[in-house]
Length: 101
Image 1 (cartoon, rainbow, N blue to C red):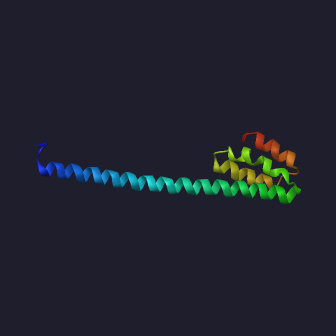
Image 2: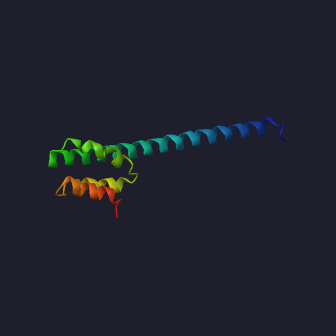
Image 3: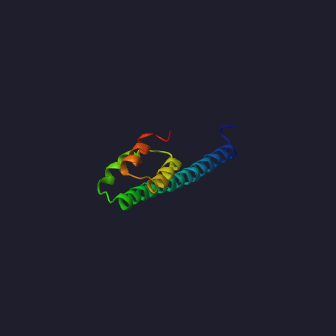
């Protein structure tokens, strides 16, 4: 049976189909990761912009590495909202350092 042309054909079709499915899944996963990365970057820029406008601080860019280390998009969104509501840059830094607690 291992030598039959039908078996080889079916095996080859299965391999090709598996490769196609793997490629499709990889593309979908890549797109999802790209969308997530874009959302995170946009939210971080929104936080920095809100802080710059509200406190007229030029050095808010120094917060960018800390913000970029946050993986959870929802945490970044919460910080963006906080950036528009805090009374001082120091208050925001305290929130940022709290790790969402």
